[in-house]
Length: 301
Image: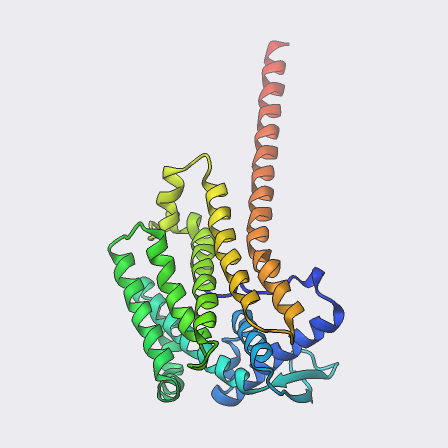
């Protein structure tokens, strides 16, 4: 479900790219330190956004480390690690574990069941440290399962559950910023749910799997794409409003790049892929028609 909250690489300055990469590397290293090599498999950009957000809001001091990465052995890398990195790494594990469990229940994927077993001890450890966040993730994932099993068609209800869950993740501490962070996380969670459903709609329809956008498309065939874009835009607009209410100066340019532009990278990729597929289909039909016309001409001679 996750993996939609990224930077727009083309619009970000070289200096800010280096900063963002340093936080990403820091998350990778923290996952390795807390869970071993297996933890690095869970690395995603969504939690990197959370690190940059919390670092900017709380103005956290980084531990900067220069290291050699196995994936990039020819060049030294820099990582930034702070309190938010450790928190985001733990939340990364919790969310991944719950996604593995969800896939196991939905698809009886034994590979995902195996991953659950691998991360079971880590999950229990984190549960002791962050009981509120873990309880919230468990609660909303269970509610999601119940609503989807009932074939709930109200997209706002379904997306709202992911929003409530991510809101609790974003609210790192119960302090004066908690409500605004919950608000930002809520709308970002709704965006992620809708974006995930949008990306999977065609494959879910083929597999006869539940997806609320299948019904939306059937009921609004002519303006389905417009409706989806409006829904996604509305969610990110609320995210941006919430962000602008927070007193963040540190890394504000990176965060605005993600919220105003980067989050649309996957959407634009899907649009481009569909356009290429459509053009390929048209080209194939044109060639078939040309072949048919040639045969008809030959028969007329």
